[in-house]
Amino acid sequence: MEKISSLHSPHVGRVKALLGLRGKKNRELENTFVVEGIQAVREALFPKMGEGFKLKQLYLTQVGVSKLSAVVDLSQLNHVEIFETSDQVMNEMADSQSPQGILALCSTKSLKLEDLWQIKPSKIAYFWQIQDPGNAGTVIRTADACGFDAIIFSDNSVDIFNPKTVRATVGSLWHIPVIADVQLDQFIVEALDKDFEIHALDASGQIMVNSKYVEESKKSGVWIFGNEARGLPELPSSVKKVSIPMKGHAESLNVASAAAILMHLIGVN
Image (tube, rainbow, N blue to C red; front, side, top):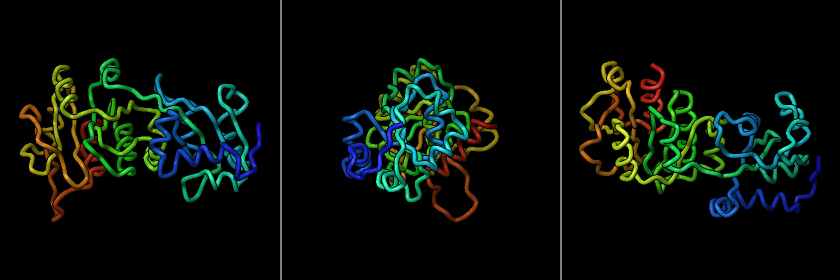
């Protein structure tokens, strides 16, 4: 295991370039993103999907070696380059405030829309121009927990490889297909062609999300969620507008909260 103790190591510079102000551009150029923490790294090493984001390099402090060795046999990771770093180096590379001593670089090999139909999904969540990285990671995790088959983000959404998004998925990025940069109008056309019912969450929707709605939504469906501030654009009449009933005085729900309520009702019940 090669050891890295210098803050001037090219490894440090590379990781910081993937996380800095030009991080998105550098991630795209290198087809690489950064993963932190034991749970996410463990899932990256043993993904639930056949096609996923392959782990390429692993950086561990002595504490990180101890933590990861408790759940993974490091001697069996012949396909991964492993480096031991000092605490100083790890603190310099990590994006999180309290690094766990475990950091990895993964390939950004992404699925395309045509790949989605190959897995024959029945429940899909689509997010239009979601901007907050924490929200994006949370809805990926929620879709995974609720048994949805795939999650899609529109063009002009937050980068799914943003370090805050990756951390917020807590490993679910390796459990469920995530497809980015899909235009809404193109997706609606293809989903209708595949005989999906399409629903859009809208505060003014006349169809209430209740037990009757859940029971009638057992077949293949798509649920569309809008931007945190602007909601959704104009949608074709073929899209059913639905709303979550609220008892209090709040005008609306946070998109991640609304998605959690609806996806749990549809996916788990």
